[in-house]
Length: 204
Ligand SMILES: Cc1cc2nc3c(=O)[nH]c(=O)nc-3n(C[C@H](O)[C@H](O)[C@H](O)COP(=O)(O)O)c2cc1C
Image (cartoon, rainbow, N blue to C red; front, side, top):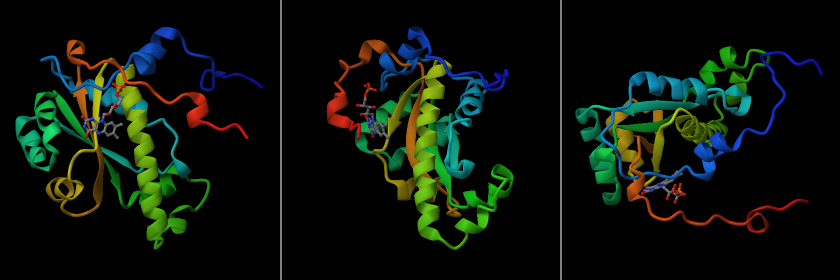
């Protein structure tokens, strides 16, 4: 197969980036007082958007809360344990999904009429939006780590309150939240284990 600069053969990435993305990357709750420039948030999105989604549907939307005023609107929706860490984080992103993501399919998936496949099929819309915005949230976390940010994802919040406050027209819906910044590694708990291959995987 011919190799082009746009489509290099996959190669195993080196230990250093693997450590930064996964092996040594941790979930952070304590943050250094260092702001995150908006250019860095843009860089994260520019990377994360290339992760695959079904029919290239790209339903995730990202709302960055940086100002104290914006954070204040979020705090009443948070589980008590998530309040202080969110106040201290330089940025909190609401990872949301667009309930009308399929309206972009003529542009995002031009080689087939996928829009009409979704219109009127609420079950498929909901399932596709939630599955793929969750995947995109995962790509977002890895992209943030790739540009040197730390993440603190959170599902401990009341989605109805977040949706009423930030998405009153009902078009976007919150999936999960993620604090972003430069973590204070001295405040981390020891790393918890993960399941072994034989516990979590089957090869059939
Ligand atoms: C979708 C999601 C939701 C989470 N919700 C919360 C939360 O509400 N509060 C919290 O303190 N940690 C939350 N966490 C953090 C996890 O507990 C943490 O990522 C996990 O224990 C692994 O920790 P490690 O990355 O340091 O190994 C969440 C993580 C994910 C991915």
